Length: 139
Image (cartoon, rainbow, N blue to C red; front, side):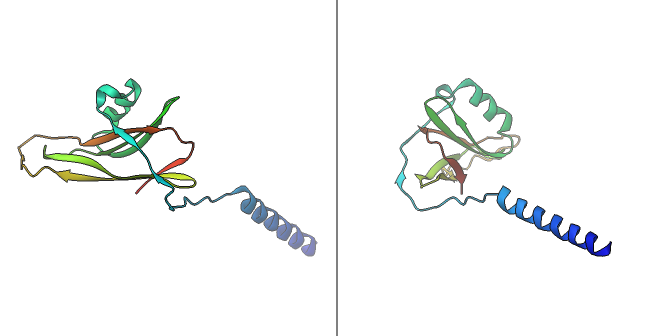
């Protein structure tokens, strides 16, 4: 009786272990650049209305999002509420690899110190590029 129970537990553990190994697939994004992607920086007037609404909902906190239409991929990065108005977001890298798009942005200052009480800005950047069926990784 003890032996049968031991074998049952052992077989069950092996089955669960094998199921866990076969059920999971880890896919690492390879960073070897195939090409830099061409993109267009878009202001609110050139974005789909649904995307503008998403940006306005999320802009108070830092965020990163992608939005796909039938023809284009939009990549948006926001830096949340800032207590100054002299900030810009720039796209430092946007490139395609074998299985992903990599995005890197930076928050820069124009140099004109405009710190004022109760003045808040929400810097973000939205770019439109060709549609690819790969994941987008933010650096």
